[in-house]
Length: 255
Image (cartoon, rainbow, N blue to C red; front, top):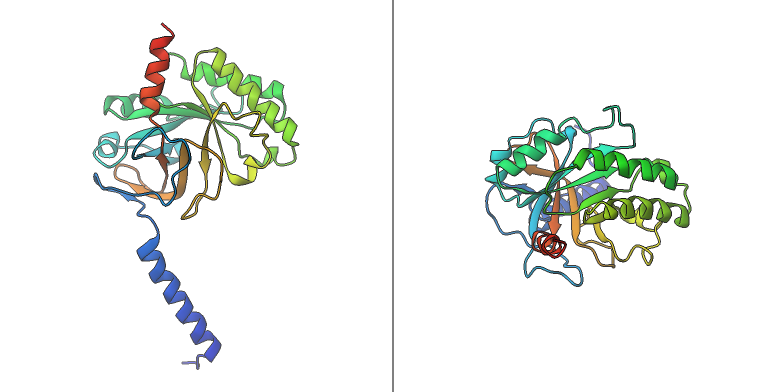
């Protein structure tokens, strides 16, 4: 056995301390039953006295046992419908219809999202039309979101990416949907949030505290969650706004 140098001993000691701190202070990631979980940070202007717990899923989660999910702490699910703008079926999430049907069957409130590859407003319009073809006729209790995070958009200017997002969201709004933006701190810096301030934000930030200082309705705080009924990891989210009540009210006022 080789001798451990003094500096290595210090490093090992620091590592042990970090692990112990993580065990005691990192939020629980396992939704196994109706347990209470408290977020580290609450955003401004929330519509809930407490918060709701949710997942977002796609074909990457494989076949989901939605009964087991419903029996866990999950209140809602945001489900991927599509990506890009190819309407041949290649860019439709293969599990979307099944996930929607099973989530509704087991009483889980739902929203949906479209993953963007658009680099022009024209492509964003095609994405919006393709997304609409996938979600037609479905009753959502949560917003439908435009997922902005792909590296193909990294070199776009703030004006260019903002125009892309506005094109998509306005097309969905005209079709009668309550819409929002999903993104992360890196890509939010590429967006003119003043021009997008009327749209709800769902932000991904995998820290003990969400470092984004603006308003948002949902916080995706980890991609390493564990939920009964789902094999492997799943994204976990805190929702701070009563979307089901608000969307129901909007729908009632529109009739």
